[in-house]
Amino acid sequence: MSWNTKKAIEELVRGKELTKQLRDLLTKSLTDDGFVDSEGLVLKICDTFANTLSLLTNSNTTAATAVPDYYYNDDLNDVSQKPTINITSDGRKSEDSGDSIKSPPSALRDRRGSYKRRKCVDSRKKITSALVDDGYAWRKYGQKQILNANHPRSYFRCTHKTDQGCQATKQVQKLEDDPPKYATIYYGHHTCKNKLKPCHFMVDDSTCNNDSSILLSFANDSTLTSKQGNDNPFLSSVKQESKEDYKPISEITYNGSSSSDYLLSPHHHQLSTLDLSSADMTVLSPDHDVLSDVVDSVHLDDLLQF
DNA sequence: TAAATTTGACCATT
DNA sequence: AATGGTCAAATTTA
Image (tube, rainbow, N blue to C red):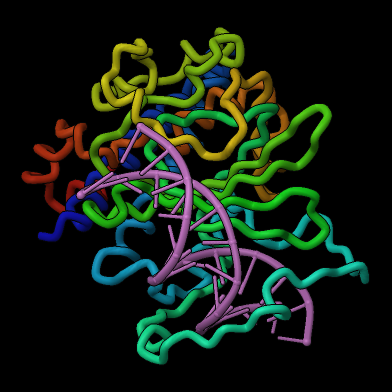
């Protein structure tokens, strides 16, 4: 069984457990607590499916694999590349073409792979008032001027892409200057070890209201709710993402697709805390080996039983 | 000196 | 042809 397959099964097991909990919740009277938990559960469940898809679609191939778009029409997490502001502006500048066209060695050109433009791949978007250290080790691999944008977009991939095949990437772009506003879109999920910090939302406690304590916790999700101190030896090696300093965040919102908003909008004030569990901190991290043991003995029949 | 960043070219999509 | 995502050589940093 390949590692990705194993992890995919882990995700399915997790999804199964979460769904069972959701079922139990729905059979209860609708208390306040139950309402919050059900929302968190839905997000977690959606995340397990997204993770599973991510794992399976990356299991045998590289990141450039063409995956049919319909795999990714995940209304819950999708922040598709469809521009929210579709403008046909004429004041355009082309930063790439033009001035100095140097033709590289043909050997170099042959090595180039296919650069598929992102479609609706599973993604999570966060709007923050400052650059957020999300605790992962990122490596910048590109920067682009974006049409009708005042600031360039930076592209990051997981530092462990090469050594561990982690496919997580993110894009960071400053949206506004005053007050500063940044958009960070996460693609894929971390499958690497050496996670640097459990949660980027722990940067500023004020952003996590008391509702965070209501989130369901699992044995293998301990890193979600436990706050590690700065004595984590990995912290010092968090890569800086730009020339601008990290500051405590003062605002985090969730931006999903329209359908996502439809589902979640009644409780937007809680999404920041809910999202932390769904976005990055999943059991995919191999340091959660509790489920690995489960997977070893799991049968597919078990997965289908609720 | 290894790892990270910068930057222009390359390439697929629109 | 314009645009956005990625590559990789050159450069910088730790």
